[in-house]
Image (cartoon, one colour):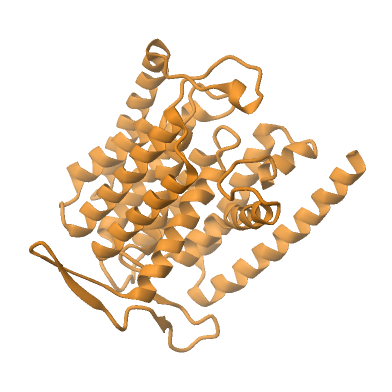
Amino acid sequence: MQFFYPIMFSLALGLLLTFLAVKVFPKLGMLDRPWKYGLKRERIPYYGGIAIYLTFVTAVLMFLPFDRQVAGVLIGGTMIFIVSLLDDIFDVKPVIRLIVQVLAACILVFSGIGILSISNPFGGTPFVLDAQRFEFMFFSAKLSFALLSAIFTIIWVILIINTINFLDGVPGMVSGTSAIAGAAIFLLAIRPGNLVDQHVVAVMAGVIAVAALSFLIFDFHPPKILMGDTGSMFLGFILATLAIYSGGKVATAFLVLGFPILDAVWAIFRRLLSGKSPFKGDLGHFHHRLIAIGFSERKAMLTIYFVSLVFGGIAVFIGSGQKLVAIIIMAILMVLIGFVMAKRLDIKS
């Protein structure tokens, strides 16, 4: 029952706020710009991420004690939310967005959230990242950080934020995948035998999962509303945070989001090699390629859901040592699928 009330409250609030957004946003002119992406269709209510953000923040403030780490999550998340909302409205430069992402990750580090160690894939002692800490005074507060831990944390947060954002090419893709990822982290957090208290992680994961799910009901193809970067980047930040909050779940998050993460890494390298900005969108993502070989948007989305569910389930029920094997299998599978898709595209062309 300790998780029932925050989850049900978040589900109800998410549904209410998204419903109101669908009805009110068109009257306020808060609609998307399909012509910007070469699309010829009616305009759809936009900035739906506002509903996700308000649902998460309200539930956290109502059901969790306000401590240093919770404050770090809310402050960092709010920074991401604001810059993403401004980007949806005014097209903020990629470098500005990147700077804010780094600053938000630094807020997490100084609040005591970060990647403290990395499991040894061959067994034995894990690689400790916070052995040597640096301390300094900030006004009257004493802050400390471990350099290696901070670097890995910043890279992880930036990677997941942009991975989720890159997914936002098909309506329902981000909300559905985020709901699956949040649910997987929730199940791990409430699993018996955890060495540290996972209550805060469980509440946040449950809240973000149902917030994404409530949005999916309106976002599922054909969509009645779109979340924009306002929603996708905020969801990415929260999922990245939950994976490293109070016990590492990086491998779990990597498995649930494995295909999108590998696709995001490949997209960044592909854009850099062609002399383009790694943050400038294109139609070369995995889900776009599925559509190019004949999948409908709905089928492409359900395919990503299925993969996320399968590997998310694997992450929940296997040990940390076996997760590396699962990640390797996933990477090989993606390469094989990519090879088959490339062959089919060659045949079609």
